[in-house]
Image (cartoon, rainbow, N blue to C red; front, top):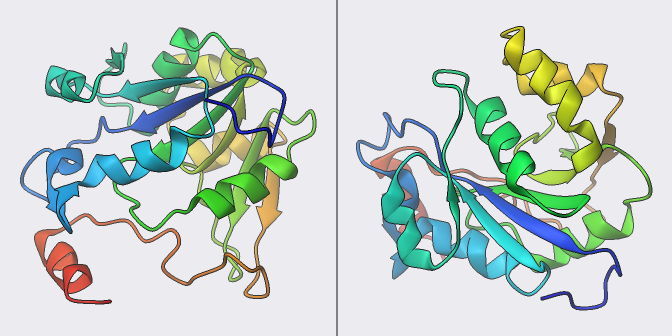
Length: 199
Protein backbone atom coordinates (compact mmCIF):
# COMPACT_ATOMS: atom_id res chain seq x y z
CA UNK A 1 0.00 0.00 0.00
CA UNK A 2 1.07 3.59 -0.50
CA UNK A 3 2.72 5.30 2.46
CA UNK A 4 2.25 8.90 1.41
CA UNK A 5 5.64 9.37 -0.25
CA UNK A 6 3.81 9.84 -3.53
CA UNK A 7 0.13 10.22 -4.31
CA UNK A 8 0.54 8.41 -7.60
CA UNK A 9 -0.48 4.76 -7.64
CA UNK A 10 2.52 2.47 -7.92
CA UNK A 11 3.14 -1.06 -9.09
CA UNK A 12 6.16 -2.95 -7.80
CA UNK A 13 7.83 -5.27 -10.30
CA UNK A 14 10.36 -7.87 -9.17
CA UNK A 15 12.51 -9.33 -11.93
CA UNK A 16 13.09 -13.03 -11.26
CA UNK A 17 13.22 -14.40 -14.78
CA UNK A 18 16.95 -14.95 -15.19
CA UNK A 19 18.50 -18.30 -15.98
CA UNK A 20 20.23 -18.49 -12.56
CA UNK A 21 22.99 -20.53 -14.24
CA UNK A 22 25.70 -19.27 -11.88
CA UNK A 23 23.58 -20.00 -8.81
CA UNK A 24 22.71 -23.50 -10.03
CA UNK A 25 19.07 -23.23 -8.95
CA UNK A 26 16.18 -20.74 -9.06
CA UNK A 27 17.89 -17.70 -7.59
CA UNK A 28 14.95 -15.96 -5.94
CA UNK A 29 14.08 -19.12 -4.00
CA UNK A 30 17.56 -19.58 -2.52
CA UNK A 31 17.54 -19.05 1.26
CA UNK A 32 19.60 -16.12 2.55
CA UNK A 33 19.73 -15.31 6.26
CA UNK A 34 16.60 -17.31 6.96
CA UNK A 35 14.31 -16.39 4.06
CA UNK A 36 14.12 -16.71 0.26
CA UNK A 37 16.22 -14.12 -1.54
CA UNK A 38 13.18 -12.65 -3.34
CA UNK A 39 11.53 -11.95 0.01
CA UNK A 40 13.89 -9.00 0.61
CA UNK A 41 12.66 -7.23 -2.52
CA UNK A 42 9.05 -8.02 -1.67
CA UNK A 43 9.42 -6.58 1.82
CA UNK A 44 10.93 -3.34 0.50
CA UNK A 45 8.20 -2.81 -2.11
CA UNK A 46 5.12 -3.99 -0.19
CA UNK A 47 4.74 -0.84 1.98
CA UNK A 48 5.33 1.49 -0.98
CA UNK A 49 3.26 -0.06 -3.76
CA UNK A 50 -0.44 -0.54 -4.44
CA UNK A 51 0.19 -3.67 -6.54
CA UNK A 52 3.04 -6.16 -6.94
CA UNK A 53 4.02 -8.33 -9.91
CA UNK A 54 6.72 -10.98 -10.14
CA UNK A 55 8.35 -11.23 -13.56
CA UNK A 56 9.34 -14.89 -13.80
CA UNK A 57 9.05 -17.95 -16.01
CA UNK A 58 8.73 -20.32 -13.04
CA UNK A 59 5.16 -20.63 -11.70
CA UNK A 60 6.56 -21.68 -8.31
CA UNK A 61 6.81 -17.95 -7.50
CA UNK A 62 3.02 -17.93 -7.13
CA UNK A 63 3.63 -19.20 -3.58
CA UNK A 64 4.29 -15.56 -2.58
CA UNK A 65 0.71 -14.58 -3.41
CA UNK A 66 1.33 -12.15 -6.27
CA UNK A 67 0.71 -12.48 -10.02
CA UNK A 68 3.60 -14.13 -11.87
CA UNK A 69 4.17 -12.70 -15.34
CA UNK A 70 6.18 -14.84 -17.82
CA UNK A 71 8.28 -13.41 -20.63
CA UNK A 72 6.64 -13.18 -24.06
CA UNK A 73 10.04 -13.43 -25.76
CA UNK A 74 12.70 -15.98 -24.79
CA UNK A 75 16.43 -15.32 -24.72
CA UNK A 76 16.07 -11.53 -24.55
CA UNK A 77 17.22 -11.02 -20.96
CA UNK A 78 15.72 -8.51 -18.51
CA UNK A 79 14.25 -6.38 -21.30
CA UNK A 80 11.71 -9.13 -22.07
CA UNK A 81 10.67 -9.48 -18.45
CA UNK A 82 10.39 -5.73 -18.02
CA UNK A 83 8.20 -5.39 -21.13
CA UNK A 84 5.87 -8.21 -20.07
CA UNK A 85 5.48 -6.82 -16.55
CA UNK A 86 4.91 -3.24 -17.71
CA UNK A 87 2.23 -4.52 -20.09
CA UNK A 88 0.52 -6.19 -17.14
CA UNK A 89 0.86 -3.14 -14.88
CA UNK A 90 -2.22 -0.95 -14.49
CA UNK A 91 -0.37 2.11 -13.14
CA UNK A 92 1.73 4.78 -14.79
CA UNK A 93 4.40 4.53 -12.08
CA UNK A 94 6.38 1.33 -11.54
CA UNK A 95 9.19 0.48 -9.14
CA UNK A 96 11.49 -2.24 -10.44
CA UNK A 97 13.83 -4.41 -8.36
CA UNK A 98 15.67 -7.64 -9.13
CA UNK A 99 15.14 -10.67 -6.93
CA UNK A 100 18.80 -10.84 -5.87
CA UNK A 101 19.56 -7.48 -4.20
CA UNK A 102 18.87 -8.08 -0.50
CA UNK A 103 20.49 -4.84 0.69
CA UNK A 104 18.28 -2.38 -1.17
CA UNK A 105 16.45 -0.34 1.46
CA UNK A 106 13.11 1.38 1.79
CA UNK A 107 15.02 4.62 2.47
CA UNK A 108 16.71 4.43 -0.93
CA UNK A 109 13.39 3.75 -2.70
CA UNK A 110 11.79 6.71 -0.90
CA UNK A 111 14.67 8.93 -2.06
CA UNK A 112 14.25 7.64 -5.62
CA UNK A 113 10.53 8.45 -5.53
CA UNK A 114 11.26 11.97 -4.30
CA UNK A 115 13.35 12.49 -7.46
CA UNK A 116 10.59 11.34 -9.81
CA UNK A 117 8.89 14.08 -11.80
CA UNK A 118 7.60 13.27 -15.28
CA UNK A 119 10.54 11.21 -16.49
CA UNK A 120 10.04 7.99 -18.43
CA UNK A 121 12.58 6.29 -16.17
CA UNK A 122 14.78 7.18 -13.19
CA UNK A 123 17.84 4.95 -12.85
CA UNK A 124 20.32 5.12 -9.94
CA UNK A 125 24.02 5.51 -10.68
CA UNK A 126 26.90 4.53 -8.38
CA UNK A 127 29.42 7.18 -7.35
CA UNK A 128 31.84 5.56 -9.84
CA UNK A 129 29.37 6.04 -12.71
CA UNK A 130 27.93 2.52 -13.03
CA UNK A 131 24.16 2.50 -13.58
CA UNK A 132 21.70 0.00 -12.10
CA UNK A 133 18.97 -0.38 -14.76
CA UNK A 134 17.24 -3.24 -12.93
CA UNK A 135 16.66 -1.12 -9.83
CA UNK A 136 14.69 1.99 -10.64
CA UNK A 137 11.48 3.79 -11.53
CA UNK A 138 9.79 3.15 -14.89
CA UNK A 139 6.83 5.02 -16.29
CA UNK A 140 4.46 2.94 -18.36
CA UNK A 141 4.98 5.58 -21.06
CA UNK A 142 8.37 4.04 -21.84
CA UNK A 143 6.77 0.70 -22.79
CA UNK A 144 6.31 1.36 -26.56
CA UNK A 145 9.98 2.32 -26.84
CA UNK A 146 11.09 -0.78 -24.90
CA UNK A 147 8.87 -3.03 -27.03
CA UNK A 148 10.26 -1.53 -30.23
CA UNK A 149 13.79 -2.34 -29.11
CA UNK A 150 12.73 -5.81 -28.04
CA UNK A 151 11.27 -6.44 -31.50
CA UNK A 152 14.47 -5.13 -33.10
CA UNK A 153 16.52 -7.41 -30.80
CA UNK A 154 18.29 -4.51 -29.10
CA UNK A 155 18.44 -6.27 -25.76
CA UNK A 156 21.07 -4.21 -23.93
CA UNK A 157 18.88 -2.36 -21.45
CA UNK A 158 21.32 0.36 -20.44
CA UNK A 159 21.80 1.41 -24.06
CA UNK A 160 18.05 1.40 -24.64
CA UNK A 161 17.56 3.63 -21.59
CA UNK A 162 20.20 6.07 -22.77
CA UNK A 163 18.39 6.40 -26.10
CA UNK A 164 15.08 6.87 -24.24
CA UNK A 165 16.50 9.89 -22.35
CA UNK A 166 16.04 8.21 -18.99
CA UNK A 167 17.09 10.28 -16.00
CA UNK A 168 20.25 8.85 -14.41
CA UNK A 169 20.25 9.69 -10.71
CA UNK A 170 23.78 10.05 -9.36
CA UNK A 171 24.24 8.79 -5.82
CA UNK A 172 27.09 9.68 -3.50
CA UNK A 173 28.44 8.55 -0.17
CA UNK A 174 27.03 11.58 1.68
CA UNK A 175 23.43 10.41 1.29
CA UNK A 176 22.19 9.09 4.66
CA UNK A 177 21.00 5.76 3.26
CA UNK A 178 24.10 5.09 1.15
CA UNK A 179 25.95 1.84 1.74
CA UNK A 180 28.55 0.32 -0.61
CA UNK A 181 26.56 -2.93 -0.48
CA UNK A 182 23.28 -1.24 -1.49
CA UNK A 183 23.15 -2.74 -4.99
CA UNK A 184 25.11 -5.92 -4.30
CA UNK A 185 23.50 -8.76 -6.18
CA UNK A 186 24.09 -12.37 -5.21
CA UNK A 187 24.69 -14.63 -8.21
CA UNK A 188 26.78 -17.51 -6.88
CA UNK A 189 26.62 -19.87 -3.87
CA UNK A 190 30.00 -18.59 -2.65
CA UNK A 191 28.66 -15.01 -2.66
CA UNK A 192 25.75 -16.15 -0.51
CA UNK A 193 28.14 -17.84 1.92
CA UNK A 194 30.39 -14.79 2.14
CA UNK A 195 27.49 -12.39 2.80
CA UNK A 196 25.89 -14.82 5.25
CA UNK A 197 29.02 -14.55 7.38
CA UNK A 198 29.09 -10.75 7.37
CA UNK A 199 27.25 -8.68 9.95
